[in-house]
Length: 434
Ligand SMILES: C[S@@+](CC[C@H](N)C(=O)[O-])C[C@H]1O[C@@H](n2cnc3c(N)ncnc32)[C@H](O)[C@@H]1O
Image (spheres, rainbow, N blue to C red):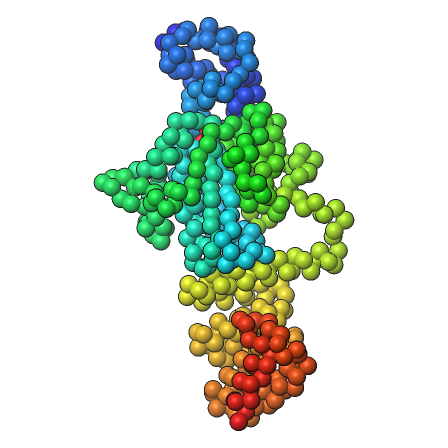
């Protein structure tokens, strides 16, 4: 290997690297930069002091950056890194992203893992979201793009084969995801159907270019995960990289950074993004166009509606997978902030299903107190009374329900009835009253 770089060369190289790769090498780390550059010069078979001058004299170009990047980047990653993020995805972010979508339609949730390293993060997302969607019984599919500046990392990512080190022993704790890997000796191969959901491309977050449109869904990404990448960038390059991410974010989409990577002056530096608190952690979200001046009571109703839709998704996920206790917990959390008759009704359904009949009755009575014309709640309460031999109470409720249903269009579908019309419910009531 040739001789070392001078202090001046180290300093100029650090400025060049920050400008072209985003990576920040403050004075105390410039000796590390010089050592990495010596290895690069050795690979090129050139004297480092000459190579550095050549590099600094010319304009940087893509292949050169891709060749140098592996010497300077840190490749620390593993599957399901920072499990708290994944918990928040399923509890809050995914339900929020799916709200308003018809889950029976085959729409796509687009995710971008920016700075994906050797692919563990991108595959974790594909596995986690595909597993979550299938438990929900949704026809929605997930598609993940993984990008990185380091071509060698991307080649490993495309091979989709990992050793146990990539799991840092977490797989034992996440046993439900084991079936998504095929074991071959001491290697784990990501199952082909999951690998098919993920594609990889080289992309420099600190470069001049935006993510090419061929790699970006036309509606934008619903979720962009860029963790443990910007921490190596200068403040100025962090903002520039976030602008690139924001430019490819779908309306209402979220950006997830590592907690320490959220810029301090977000409002002034990135007005296109807002900080949102989700389960005690901050995410970034695209600012809706109509945001300005939209506060007020309509806004509050909107946010209540949003959280109810998110709650409904979680409720269906838990109930469909037999996780009744978790369904009750999330309903109770929601009900702690608002006496919403719909949530009380859903809770009564779970309570009935788990045999907690007294609790179900109390939930239904509270529900009807809030909303006396909640037909399905009245019907469920009446049926419970009849089933438990409390015929007089059941009959009284059914007669009341009959009168109330007489005000409703015969063919209209009753809310929360899963497709029963007013006239169908009336004929059931008649047969029960006979
Ligand atoms: C520490 S890894 C983080 C991997 C993964 N996001 C995680 O949290 O497990 C940082 C990754 O950022 C990539 N990176 C660094 N500078 C980059 C740049 N300018 N553009 C794109 N990726 C970059 C590195 O190559 C490396 O793979």
